[in-house]
Image 1 (cartoon, rainbow, N blue to C red):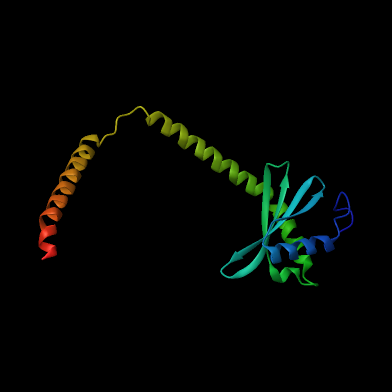
Image 2 (image 1 turned 90 degrees about the vertical axis):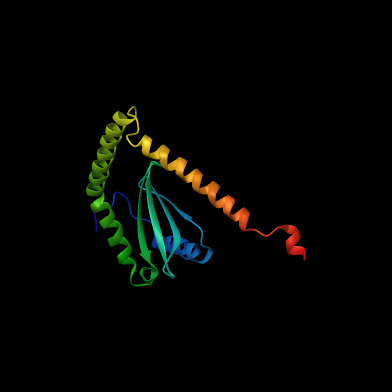
Length: 157
């Protein structure tokens, strides 16, 4: 692992204590800054099983999250956390490309939709007829309910 980190990674002890506090209190815990990354941990509940969500944030805008099962906090399992974070970093360029493609698709759909905004609704006549029929049915149902309701004087006798 030598040479892989620009500075030594933070000690896992405060991180584990914050993780334990997040699990016990159910609140988000800020672990601090490391290599211009802000790291937070929060408890989550999925199908009755507790786990932790670790969020790594850059410049308050870009974030990536990793869900950690509670078993990863055991004494000999912390390597899994590091492996999960490394995978998150390793797959970040692919995920960024996927998000850019999805954004481009959404922009194209928005541009296509923008062109349709001025067009009249092609089923406007059918809609107006259906709304008129709905009003007629509601009036008929109300009249029928009123006719079937017993008179207040008839209820008292």
